[in-house]
Length: 149
Image (cartoon, rainbow, N blue to C red; front, top):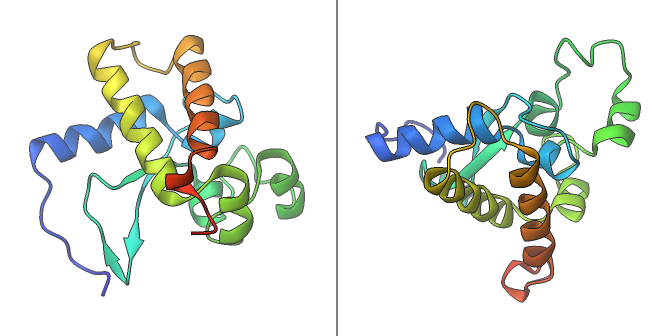
């Protein structure tokens, strides 16, 4: 059952910090938006969190289907047309567009490793964003991440 989880160690804390604050919302980044503020989405399998290293950043819309102050005046259906479905509201549509949670977590881990090797400052730069989108395309075509499996 999803519930209390053990405290984060320093590596997990840094991973989540980098994910939320330096990479931001992974789905938004894949759409070309830079460093959109994010919550950290933990992957759940069998009603249990996989751990602090299994997750990725998602904005309020993509994570919980909630509008932040920048989207308050836009109806939900129009937001979905502009930036895609919310995981909380339409998990299958979200997965069809962005890939599985595992794919997005692995893509996030790849980007955190890339950041650790060559930091880009306080927000993801254009080159890192472009590289992330190319890597996502490669991962979407990989059988390991097949949604039909």
